[in-house]
Image 1 (tube, one colour):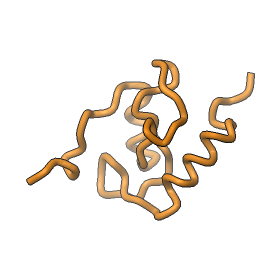
Image 2 (image 1 turned 30 degrees about the vertical axis):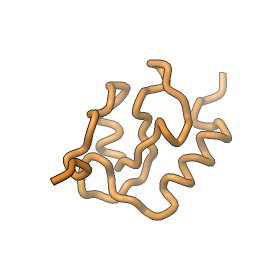
Image 3 (image 1 turned 90 degrees about the horizontal axis):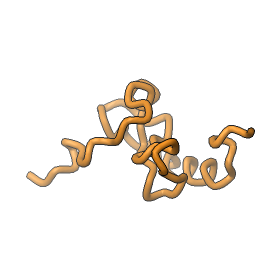
Length: 77
């Protein structure tokens, strides 16, 4: 079975998400990976609506747990 990360849709959406070198959604580091908000093993998909920019450390630490509903940097002040 092929890796789900070799899927052309994932590769395209990951490249789109990371094109402008965004900041990690969880910390101030630069994002280097595309994190699935709803993990693939929980029924998520590779759509842009289900991906967030994340640094490798945060993405690895999150694993397949669900994302926090909002990031502290995106809350209105």
